[in-house]
Amino acid sequence: MQPARHRSRLPVITVALLGFVILSACTAPTTRRSAPDTQQVAAEREKQREIAVDYKVRQYVRLFRVSYPLLAATAPMCEGRHRPGLGYILISRDDFAEDMRPAASRVFQLGGGLQILDVFADTPAARAGLQAGDELLSVDDFRVGGERGMEIRLNQFLRNGDPRKPRRFTVSRNGRQLTTTVRPDTVCDYGLGINGAGEVNAMADGDNVIVTKGMMRFAETDQELALVVAHELAHNTMKHIDAKRTNATGGLILDVLAAAAGVNTQGLFSNIGASAYSQDFESEADYVGMYIMARAGQPLRGAADFWRRMAAEHPASIASSHSASHPASAERFVSLEQTVREIQAKQARHQTLLPEREGRR
Ligand SMILES: [Zn+2]
Image (cartoon, rainbow, N blue to C red; front, side, top):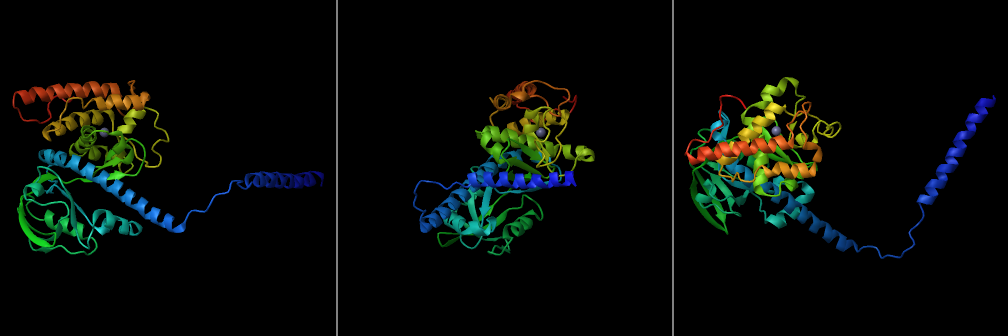
């Protein structure tokens, strides 16, 4: 009996203590403030939605603009995976969650249909005279309406047949109807996306290239962003995912930050949950990626500095480690510089810019 009575007294003490803690945490504020005006709050909420959609869309525009010439430059390396490249971005109300649609409609002056958000310089769309703000009415005999999923259906239509087939675009511009012929580029058919994660990373899964929000921020210049995208495209074109599939857990393969984190990656990627490529594949993606950059006309000078900045951000990445799945940043810098010299020598001799296939590096 005694021990039981003793035990039953403990919860009483605990509850009393808890009550004290809760009471002291609930001490009321002592300053007098006026409540925010509900109308002003509602207006501010819409303003913030406008800022949010604008920011998000501008990130996508940057990623697509930087990636377009890379996808075109990679075309000879992605056998059997081509689509027509037009060089524009389309936008519609469909692209936004319901609560964001009114804000998006105001910011981008969206009507009911598919419209051109941006046209990249020196692309088929630009050469054909298409402009940002044009609303698509038809492409050849495909009528472009405002129904859900219209962009996907249009892209399926464009994928049918020869990717280089000239297409007749009819658009509405300032209430006037215009028709023009677009002669598409052939580009590699890989998807592009931005992942909401804050860490500095990028991924490739054989079908897509995904860049994290953190990487979009970290890659300050377009050259740096191109370096990241070209590296991921190289993983896809070199079919590293197929070679790796046997031990992959599925899903996207984490990439650049794994290098920076060296061996100490435990828990770091638990929320995304996939393993990284091997050191050999990483080195190859760096090497082939540099060729993709060169073929796309990106300046190579200073591109390797990316790894010096990464080292500054993640000092753990500097030292080489044999047990790490990724080469260290010091090694990656020196190898990239070496590749740049190899490519520059070819450029000087007007040779074709394709990776050396013999004598694997
Ligand atoms: Zn990689």
